[in-house]
Length: 362
Image (cartoon, rainbow, N blue to C red; front, side, top):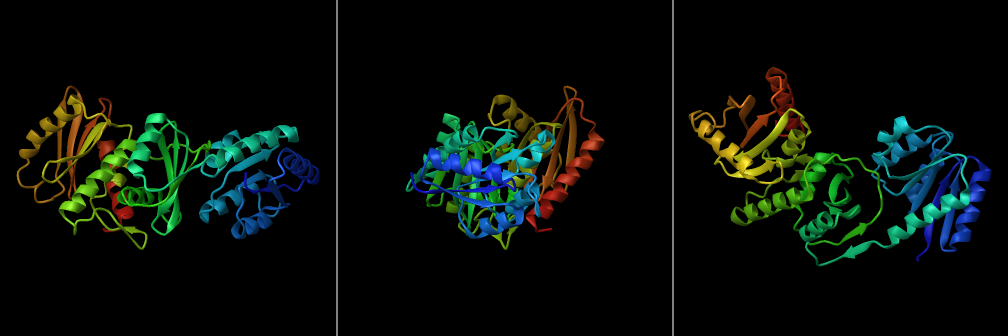
């Protein structure tokens, strides 16, 4: 194993010494650095590469949560083991945004903690470095084998991280981009040749991406075919941090998936070709829903074809069905039986406003 550098951030000298001694005893390849406050720790992490951080949440000057927030804002990600003498259940969801891989409650036995840390480091050492292998195939293997870990690759000029758990994509991070912008950039460049690495580490990320890995691959494949047919129609791209195309499927899909009022949906282009559907299985029910609604859609006359913001609502078996034109996308939604339609219409308008803001073209 190569030299691994661990930073211990704690103002309790006894804890620091015990952890340091036990780490060096368990493996002489470990290099240990220490800091007794959060601000000094941030300065170290900005200048030097660390392989893992042991962090007490109650350090002075800049506490642990403030340090984690600063690291997150600066796009610095690495495994972090939290040690604390307080109950952090209420903070757990916030901590999951950061690189937390383990939480240790005081008092603890230093030798038990370093065994856990040694396991984390050795799991990182098992990472796969992949060259000259199609990234879509890698994603399919991750989903099939139900892997957990982090895919690290270049997205634009920055290192991007795609977090997956049990074969499901959980989150994506790229410095300087929002989550939706990062997802669009990842999809748009999925078929580009590049070096990627996978670290098999339990990152504790919560699910923030609604698309499956297979849906991401399918959308990337669609964009690839589209670029072949129409080189000038290159799909969604980023310019100065803005998404330049209005047919931004990932932004719309991610938001539609977050609405509990929507039972299923289809997104189609203005010619009626299906681009995306939910649930992910393109079963007969989803297809029949689309066919049924396209018949109704024809009755709206030229308004949909002209791109006017037509909304068509109908009822079927006690449920609301809705067709809505947005830019050059057509959304076909089937709403749950108990949905209060006026309330949902407000939420839908909020969706379009948010999408327009994120796309940056309104």
